[in-house]
Amino acid sequence: MESLIENKKLIIGLYALFIIVFMIAWIYSSSHAAEAISTLNAANDTASSMGLSTTVSPVDLFITNEMGGIVTYIASIFFGIFAIVGLLYNALNLGALGPIMGYFSPGGSLQYIIYLIPHGIFEITATVLQSAAGILLFMFIYRFIMAIVGKETRGLSESFEKAKKPLIHSLVIMVFATILLLIAAPIEAYISVPISELLLGI
Image (cartoon, rainbow, N blue to C red):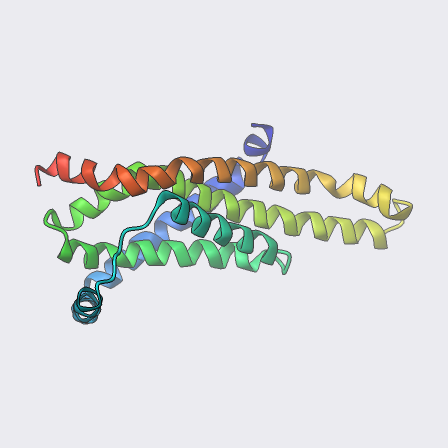
């Protein structure tokens, strides 16, 4: 919990960024949904004619989300850029899908929101935590390099000791994110859709 508490400003800031981008993407997608919907209709017709299934297992969901988080984390050694890019990518995707999925859902966009909440509470939080962990990883690398080139420490081990706190926090936060994704995967696979249909009486 210490890792979360000490980095709460970073986490809250990233969460706020996610929500803002999500809303902007939703608004923009609402005004450009027609073209995307026609494309998706064609894709759905092709998938149906080929007998393709859109069912995804909890294991597949977890592996996809976890691997994406790990890639974001490792790639964030490059100035933490990928931590922000990964967060923005997820927010844009989820926000842009809202009006489009609303077209295909019997309950409209409201059903998409209700569908998103049960697993999204865990999955979106995990995404935010993975981005925060990536930024902390870059902070560690930066402090480690500065400690090496500085005159206050002697040798790599002393430099590491001085700089290691962000690294430890980043690893702990990644573990928290993994736990949240483990919770989110079965909820998304088995619960989110039935709950949205139940609440809307579909």
